[in-house]
Length: 175
Image (tube, rainbow, N blue to C red; front, side):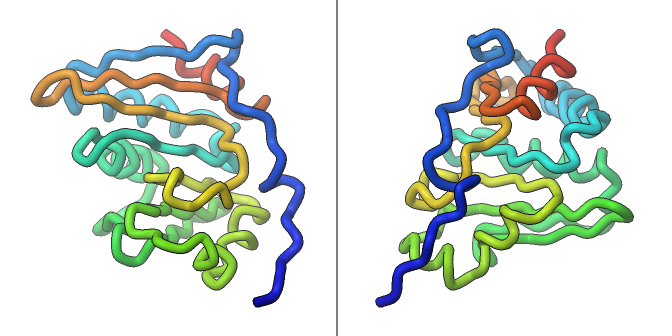
């Protein structure tokens, strides 16, 4: 087995911090509130080269948020969950987007084999569900969005910034 040198942007990064050092907590009473948040986030120029990590249990609303975000960015047609494919790429004029779902990721060596290091080192928006399944291979996210169901359609989201880009996004979406 050969060893691969780690890309500095991917390994040894600091823990994410919120804009003022504290996470931002948002309540989304229904899916339309989730959609409104996604539309506001999509309008931010800093999003174009961000890495956003999405956390939450099965059914928390991670994929729903991503679908609303992709629609708001201009993705048309069917937006599939990448659960089985691991990644679904989307190309828009001037913007590449990769939506990852690491739920079924079983071996971090798959990371190298699939070429994900190159994707994360290139410009574009990266969205990752189930990042903990990637075995520490992911870079520090610019923004972590942890979603927790609080009712049938209600959600609480906790946003934590991990970079200047993440802090800019937090400031922009803060109510």
